[in-house]
Length: 193
Image (cartoon, rainbow, N blue to C red; front, side, top):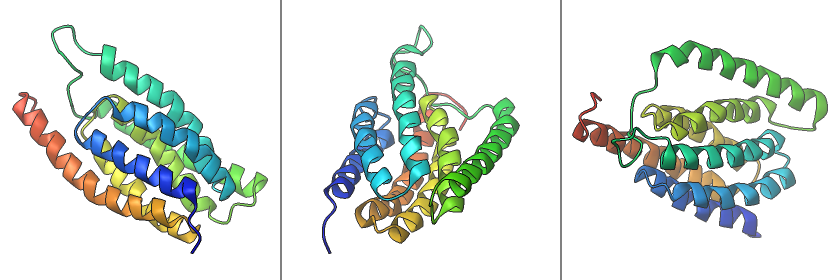
């Protein structure tokens, strides 16, 4: 097996990213930016066009997330608190996710040679919600990432990106642990978890 250095490098950066996310560290945004820039090249080479396009969105959300975590906190707080996904967002975000999934699927089947349009468009659409929820430090973002990670793991093995596929398998485990850690942090800060 020939090693794809972009696959290996982005997998290692991804591991650093998820561990920093697990710790709720603002440094995850810097690691994420580098990972996303390299991911654009990798996904384009592998024909994962929705994932490639998603990296541009991730770059924008990385800047937004860093800003929100650093400066978007209540005046009396030293950092943005972990909180629950607001109920008023559930129906609009489900509708937006479904519309985005269908729209990306249509683009992939109409304008690309994608061999995995259902899974590629699904993970991309759900990731739009996931990164937004992470930027706002919503506890439930972990559930979104678990779904994305399971499908992405399978997808990347299918597309012969083994390091990243293995990383996404590990992401599932870390996301479960991350949910527990963030929930515990919420309780210790006085937020009902």
